[in-house]
Length: 88
Image (cartoon, rainbow, N blue to C red):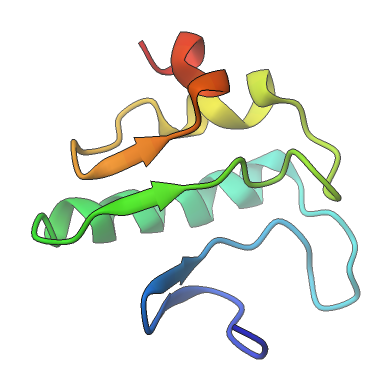
C-alpha cells in the first residue's frame, strides 16, 4: 500500500528492498526487515502469508541471495516454487 514502507497494513506485510530514494538496500538491511517479518509471522500463526519473490525484480537480487533469508520461516508462510531448493 502506498505510504506504508514496512510492517502490516490491512492484508499485506511490507518488507522493504529499496530506500525512500529508490536505492536498493544492502542484503544485511533487507535481512533485518525479513527477520522482523519472520517474528511477526511466527507470533501470528492464525494468519497465512503468501510471500512473493521480494528483491528479485527491481532491486536486482537473485533467488539464491534472498530466499535463504526466509529459511527459518514458520509454517504459515508460503513461498514461490522457485525458492524451494533454498528453503529445504
